[in-house]
Length: 85
Image 1 (cartoon, rainbow, N blue to C red):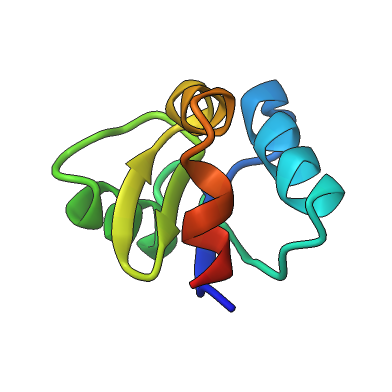
Image 2 (image 1 turned 180 degrees about the horizontal axis):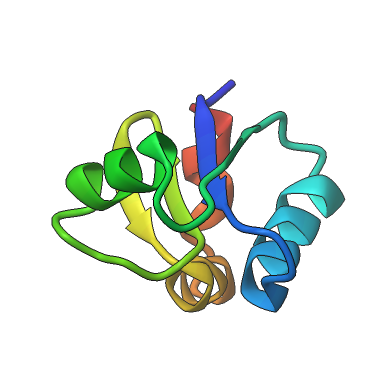
């Protein structure tokens, strides 16, 4: 199974949507709370090439992007193969 990491912040509808997609698919993931000013936020920004929005999603250390990119990947049929590892 793939290693999924998702950096999130409280009250973020995009974060909730991404988490809900992984949950519906039965995929195990590590949610990393990344509020403004936190070390996790700085880590997410560094790993994502400077992106500051939430969520930031990584599958097997590959940067997927945010919620919009995740949903587009799923619509194209590209997410399930990544989740399978």
